[in-house]
Length: 584
Image 1 (tube, rainbow, N blue to C red):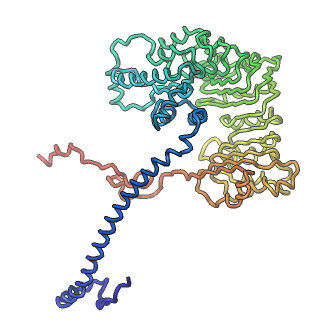
Image 2: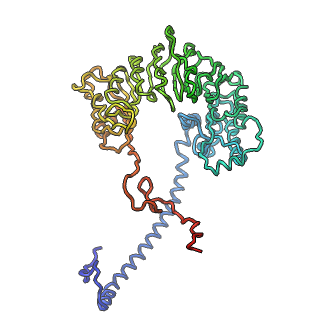
Image 3: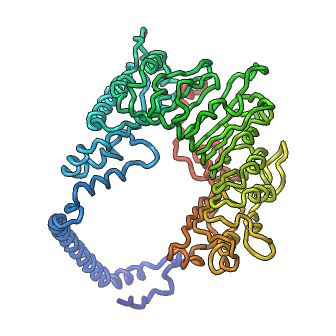
């Protein structure tokens, strides 16, 4: 209701001090209003109580309805075989399941008794395990026993299903006090036995399918236990990973690697430690990371390129080669014959931490000594920029999928690489090019956001670059504007694409920005997106930077943190002030 006009309007909201007589008049004037206000408060309290009572009744009725509605729920009537397929799809797609109640079969089993019984009847749910192993100390004995018990439960429920295991050490960064406590709780005379975790896994080696034990088998006893396994002990083994330490200079010849079932192998170590027991002709997927931590031996033997065993890899479809540390290469013989990999479709080349490109200038140049008739995918996004053009030039005319880094390239250098691969249908560019060529020292040059301006299909740019392009991905974009990206998309989608007979229509685009959104691109592409002609994924995330500015609060407990927000940690006075001379 409208409020009445106040006879004291002239002095309301001012600092005027009313007289005693005016104070009495104001009290008398407010008396009926205070009575009305009390009545309204009483009515509000009554309505709140009524609303609370209705809410309780509604909750009770809702629970009553829901309990009956559950009886006719489609999930309750779903056949068990369909529900089992759904359960399998809930498992992580690209890793094993952690032994945790928040995912996988343990989460499914917590829903209801029916789901629990169904999950317990599915061995495949319990046969993909990711283990995080505690340090072997008396202080962590309780955690060790708990993990071993959980492992045994999973292995029992997995029955005879093929087993996938990935194991790693607990990688918590311990404080000085924690490290001291661990050393104090280490057994004085530890038993030289195989770790309990590995013993449990070896007992079911006949189920092994995809095994990663590189972080679990570092002790001599664990290594000896693995070397005692025979090929007949792992009849289902399809993939195995070996991490040979830098001190291992002889072939890491596990006999289990000679099992005929092995199809994928991952190796990390020096070349001299590469196992020779593998049946190379059976491998479909091979990943090799060679490193050398010793930089003092200038004349030490280098990697023989191409690798001698590649000629035996007649079934190989995917090859990953990484060079790290101080690894060197051996000069190929002048009369060496070409090595043919008749089924290789995917090639990934990388350089790792500590790699000295100047010491190994021809590490990947021997690619020209390989015959790759079916190659269609090349990923060199982790390779030195100076080598990428030569490699793309060698195999570019057959590539359908290409990924490389633009980090230290100019837009012109990126375009030269794209022109060398005219048949590319899927393209992934990592980071944006820079405006000027990289120089040895000084700050990094600014990024060039105009790369796509040269790829836009129009009469000015001439023949289209990458005319077969259908899937495009760019990561780490910051200088590229949303407006230019929209122009590029429109030039590769109808109706523009219809004017160029040899130009493919863009089907999918994925761009991640390290800045905030400028315009809503989706509004201009709504029709194409709704008709599924274009799959568009755009992610914007402004980088978190430390604010630059003066703060008068620096050095006290209210000083802002790196994000400019007040610190929440309360600083206490130093107790040693109690012993200051002024207090004696």
